[in-house]
Length: 211
Image 1 (cartoon, rainbow, N blue to C red):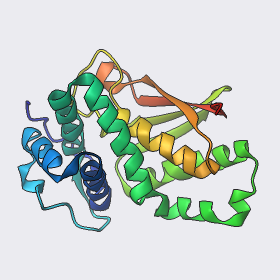
Image 2: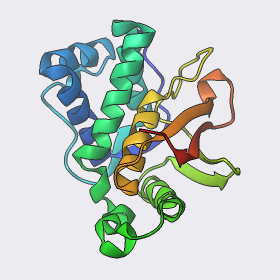
Image 3: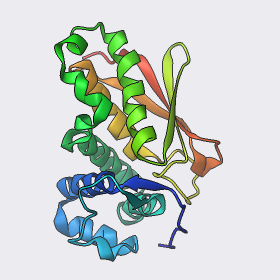
């Protein structure tokens, strides 16, 4: 696949490391190595970023990983793997970051469900705002919260005719499940920079799904 030009924007090494570990958990070491080769990131094979918060993991590399998933497994398969990897990112360690660490406290757990969303989503956004070059905003739009990222590492440098930031959707779905204490919520990407949008925006619907 064509090499995506560097963005000049970065995640901390630890976030890149967690994403690679999540991909390995989902598809196995050999599958991940094939993706890294296809993405032009063979230097990361058996050489994950260090476990620190230095901002050195390029958005273009993060995007290349997701583009390689779609190229190797097709749109449907790549989407499914991104969703699973995004969920695994949260479960493998993101809940231990900063503002989210208090969500295990009893005071948070006894909040009404809507209060958990109102408090928890901005806490998740602050992690990215404080530790990375991804700027995230939350806007209450009535039936849903708009969770917007600009710039977006998931689709950086790629073009598409449909929303393609499935890793972020998977992360949000798993984060909401954890924050709410076991409820599932509908999350849809309603604007995507790869389609020409100004930001990558997810609608996080406030009412939990039945069942």
